[in-house]
Image (cartoon, rainbow, N blue to C red; front, side, top):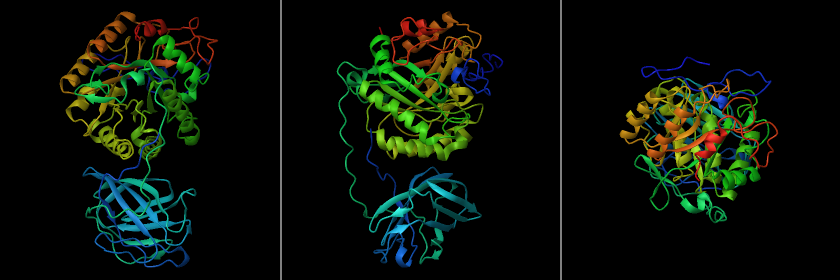
Length: 500
């Protein structure tokens, strides 16, 4: 356990997830610690590339060119530019069918720190960038337009030159000046498949599409609301798949009256998302689909402490899920669980700007909750320089045996500055998640009363079995719910403070 903070020194965040009889490296948090239409929100930058590549001909259109040479086009589309860096997507329209590609060019300005997704063999040597297809995106049918990869980089989104595709030097140079979008070459996107309305009497049926109103959350009728619910354990460390079980979610909705469920997808530890992205993204999708069926709000949590070191993975993860589930009114995105003691302005905020931009390219409406430094305690620091955008909230975490008035003072300062807060994780325990089994219910009640007074939504840590006091369930708890006789630790206190 870390040293407890004071009013002058904020307490560190919670420690590692606790699992009985399993020894794992410590993490920083306690015991823990359906499809939107793609939009082109920014002007495209289009570069002249190929005159001809034989049977695999590609043509990239110059920004000011009225027509393209025969072949195909490559669209280099800057979707976000924040001055010190930018994000771009690259699309190819094939003339004749191609099977596999390597693209390279020279940036004419100073660019560094490039991080691309859906590619292999990416490199940036000086100004020269190169990347190849990732296999699944290598085939492009004749006449087809396919967005093949994207990237973020530091520097200016200026011109590119000396463009080659599959080793062939192509005509012309790219223009870095932002222009109006060219006429789309791909078919007009269709609306996502209609989804069934949420069941009658459920939280989503009652509140509908959420939005941020001042320093609060409001429902689709503009009424200030407070959502309350619980969080999963790190998915890869659950004793059983409680989080992914539809019957369990419906039981919690009907018996505990939860309105929101947080799916905490571990990212960095062994066996988590970075080790098997396909597996854990699929498990998250089960929870999202179950929540839509149950009429419960769901927080998709990228449960990391160094997410800024995995920015490209986060962008790919949220781009995909926002594209397929961003049209649902019950989805809430949480791109960074608990940043450690790192700079807000130099590290955390730039990460959020990139990931928020990626989400907003697919999902313009749903709330995004942004983690804050010092294990999501420094909300006052974020309030001094918030991320630009709409429907953005900020993460506050507390554990009542560790965090007290001094942390609420920081939160009050953030609220006074107009920041909307969401307590996506809390416990009536020490910041290690309650490894000693203690609960501090008097201080926890002060926190719960404060959240109610400020209409701050929350999810309590955590739906799993174990000895530490933030585990909600005791040994033998079935996966499907029916837990009246299986409550553990701070569970009775949490349940008493859920909607009655």
